[in-house]
Length: 159
Image (cartoon, rainbow, N blue to C red):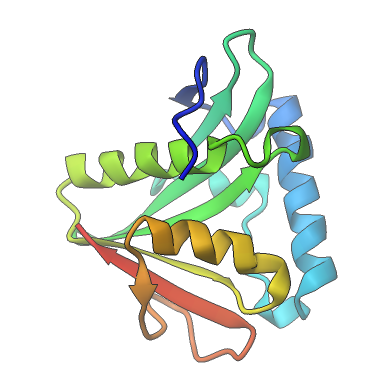
């Protein structure tokens, strides 16, 4: 696992910030290019502004956007990771792991019992699945409002 990137600041931020909007649109475009529409569970900016969601960005010390992620709370016990994305220029530098660690710490601070996520089953999502496996996530059945979908992989981490 790469070392924690030096100078990366993770903080709660409004997903409607212009550079974040562009990154989230890139994310949505890639999801629709990779998966059938009924299997795309990525959220747009307005849905990420839901009060049940904590949205964070990772930025360099000089403010350049490196990545983002979100934690959606489903009741008192379950959190869900959403919108994990790293900019192309920042990939391979440990940004996603830094965002993931921040969100898992937030979930623990809330007293959640577990954090789960849905990601794609396609090869495109292999790096994401490896990231989650390195952090202890294991396969699980669909959770919350998800259903069986051959294009989805469901993972969970007891906290």
